[in-house]
Image (tube, rainbow, N blue to C red; front, side):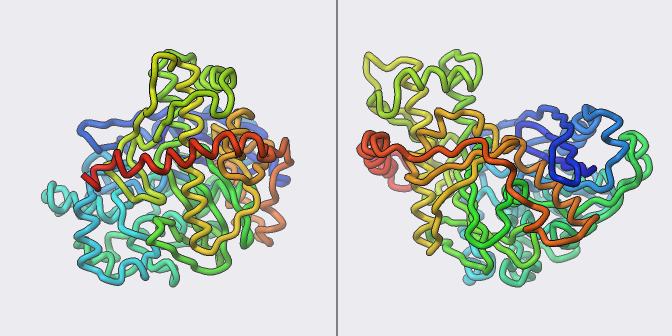
Length: 482
């Protein structure tokens, strides 16, 4: 048995799999996000640990007792600042926090070859600009900082006492030389830090510590090894078999991602495409990232009084593709690909007296799908071919949304059994690779296919004018052009 733990934004999920990759048990615990000021998004690191203990504790004790190894996955980019006693100095600054846009410009000015080293633009969501913001606005906290960890790596510290990070997660800090798979001294120095502030680097299937005896006793398992793991998207890719050049997935979580595995480092920073290390040795990946995806479904449910996402999907289906004229631009937390715009915010356009909750729901599904279409174009601009996409994340539960997405993207979507488990499954598979060894392509096989959604030519034709209007609307709502 192998345990995977995913430190998400809205909750922690834990799963146990057997050697064949079947999910035998799972548990979860919720998390909340604090937004004390405009553009801010924070969480208490201790809440991650409490939720982890609750999620693992929800798995049957008989399964926990058989666990041979643990793998971690987690939300990327979060800045967790620790003092000399490894205590958090402030709430962690999350991936969807937009306060450090000025620091991004300063960092790029300080390191002219930043794009070549990091493979990415400096964006407010990444970790490094957050530390520059703390240095400028909270100098006492910056001076007291001895270690900076990513969310899953803070949980690892509590589990094992070790400070380590895998390369896929570390690549999202903008402190990594992505081609060389090592920290960049120049990028660290640009934020007033050095290697002493960083965890050691490991590959995803490498052992990065062992479960502490006291934690093992509470969890009812042996002091098993803990793998390096992966950032949530890379771990999710491992979970559904996206482990070879050209394999691709669509992640419908709080944020949204199109992820393509590559056998070499291929960057396209000007298109706001991310080029990161994969969590498997010798692999990299490209991502188009959208800061709001399934979170838009939760938002419109609250806005319209719907009883959760399922009610939103059901309402939208009564309208049908392009059944209403409303447009939704899904930039509730800003946007990365292709706009790199932390300040833009979402908008409803073309509302009229007939606009109702069902038509608003349909517009939201379309708007997120159109944002993914923009991201796919940016990936193709980087020379990447995407012919089909495996679907993971909570949004994978809706067959109707799949119809809208496949039409907007004009590619088939492959829905896999257990795909909604996502990164936790990948964490468990990385643990299996750590313990058993072997070829990742033999162990990290795609789960069985539940259904394939082919793009409907009629839906493509209906949505095409709205996609064009969506793309024309962005310049009129962004502060960057005001």
